[in-house]
Image (cartoon, rainbow over the protein chains, first blue to last red):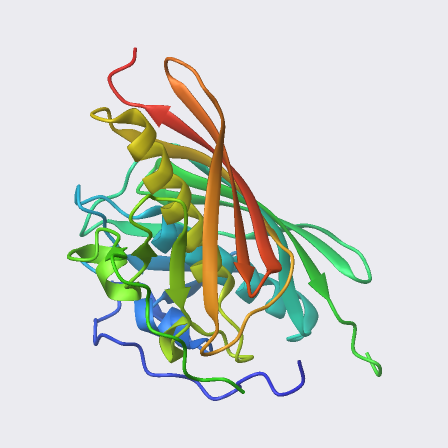
Length: 150
Length: 137
């Protein structure tokens, strides 16, 4: 876990950040492959956004579950890094509900929440919105490896 | 580390491989009888630690179950409404992930299904899902 990539990767596509957002640094090749992802600070919490494009949709033109699941896993991982000074961590379980659909051109936003943090386990949740509409919710359990000198 | 994989068996076809997310992350191969699906892990599928990204694992489980549901429904379409994914173990570049799915129960409007992803017999993910059958109001 100690050799996790710490060099920001270039997103697979050059897409300008929407107003008020900036490019989130990406460290996972699969996230850069679907990226860029965007982030911003709101009330002390880092929020995230994904602009849905043709790499993220299914044959019906709506956001593919796989793209939203990946974005969710990424957002929760970022939030855990922010809460732990980048402790090594892995997803143990993710529960995902698909409430409605997003389409190409939609900006899917997320404000991840640490529900409870123990020494080795973190309980997370997040809603994913297009405007005011919830399209997707996720809860997750992650395992962290506390730093020896923390 | 093994970075090459055996050829995909004859007759396997790419799942919705011509469009969108499935084209971008695929190919994901389906056995002719639908009994299993294969993904060969490429560099784009990895996380920063060199293992397959959790999102790609969940995406694969979603695709394996979604395609299995679709085949059980013949003409009707269905949408994922819920997915529970447990991350049992990692997999690395060049490994071949095998996905299988079994329908637990199919009602008039809902399909309950489970899925397992394995690498050479080692389980890396177990998942369950609920699909809503469209037009079944």
